Length: 155
Ligand SMILES: CC(C)(COP(=O)(O)OP(=O)(O)OC[C@H]1O[C@@H](n2cnc3c(N)ncnc32)[C@H](O)[C@@H]1OP(=O)(O)O)[C@@H](O)C(=O)NCCC(=O)NCCS
Image (cartoon, rainbow, N blue to C red; front, side, top):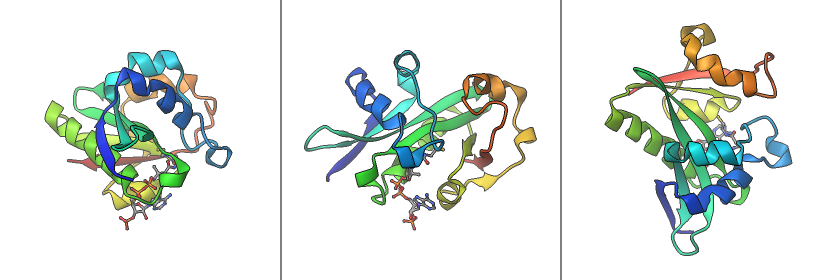
């Protein structure tokens, strides 16, 4: 494997859709996204691709929420490629983009807090996040019984 992290392209969407649809054992860890969402939010996404084959191995999105706040979401690495730092590289690319845009506070809602803690995120009370953040939750199958942990990082 010879990975490259780059911004997503329209040709990547089908693979991103499949990545976010979940392995059965990942159920609940990442929210599936519709094609409509993926096309309209494509510019939020980074992908990890194999330079040799062009295969999409992982994806991650940075969603701008408010004046000084963004969310890392839709992070998924294909099962056979986990443990190769692709998740880290995808999140770091998203955080780097946040800084480029001028946003220095990023959060994640996650069931894999240990992974994000390794990247410098710290647990935060959900109530600390502004109301605006919860707009998407109404579309979540888990709503209103959210079991995700809020974590933030200051860049
Ligand atoms: C979580 C996920 C993205 C990690 O991807 P990955 O490419 O395997 O992770 P990396 O190889 O970049 O790991 C980076 C570091 O985090 C650690 N790590 C990876 N997954 C971890 C986990 N689930 N729990 C704790 N630590 C983890 C690695 O050991 C590595 O540690 P190091 O700094 O000592 O090397 C991947 O397991 C995945 O897609 N999971 C299912 C979907 C999911 O949970 N998405 C997050 C939604 S918010």
